[in-house]
Length: 204
Length: 204
Image 1 (cartoon, helix red, strand yellow):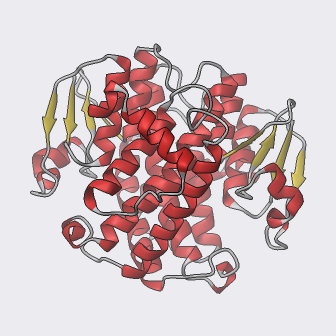
Image 2 (tube, one colour):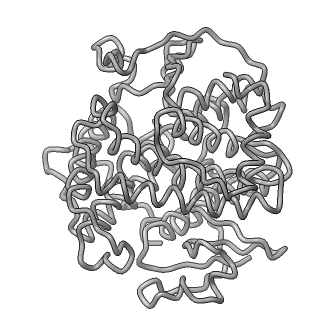
């Protein structure tokens, strides 16, 4: 098994953090996105969409999509549970993972891709108004996540899960690229971010 | 248990098709999105984001997000299996479900919400440039889906799965409201659509 990875990209980081939580080590190969290595004929032969992360399985098949890769490792090694242990937990974690992804990560990523000069290579046609709308949505989302975290330790409840990994990596992208600022008023979100940031997996 | 539903919106339909495939029947109640019934205090008390579909469990807990609701029923009623039997099948079905959702369903939703007057009720700031870019992305997705379907009957492989439900609901919604069309020359995609549309669940 082999994981095609890039240190400074958010989706590969979600998988690295997940693997660190599971205590699983997988050999990694760097594909330099900034040098366009994901557009090389060699890489496109592995994944025609040219996306990272990409997992090469032992039978030579290729699995892409960060959450699908995480789910694969979760099925192979259920402990510690990061996708839930029963119907109710599985559904609730999926709900918060999706909300973290669709309401926080996607708006932050779109705001970055459609406004930053550094992202022009990834997003040749940038729509500035779309970036502004997404930044606003990310702000609203941080607000309701803050409210949710008022009486919960983690996004989906008492259990640290894939939903926290997605939200944490999304905020990392947003603040590292200065796409968003996390208001000091959002005390619960700040507390949660610090808590997750202290986990050893946050360094992955 | 009760499902808050809407007859035309694509996300509630994903759940209805899924439940029909499972042979599960549950009471539903319509929330009229165009009348803003998802923005009433009563509904926002159930889900602060005001989204449909929403499943209220017998203990009063609310589960949002179409795929989370489907996963809940998959855990309760494993047959017929729509999310994959083993680690590998689960991972690849998740990969395809995510690709279809992120590359086809979402761009269609953006193209429709930002490009069609009627949807201004849901999307007050409509961005024509974003609608156009999204329609192009949806078309690219149709092309690679067509290529994928040249080699197999269903999107994720030999078996019908939640990935097919997501794609079918995206296409049907787009065609019903005047969004991006399915090009005539994509014969494999058309063959697949005829095939999934013949299933009894397509009427859900």
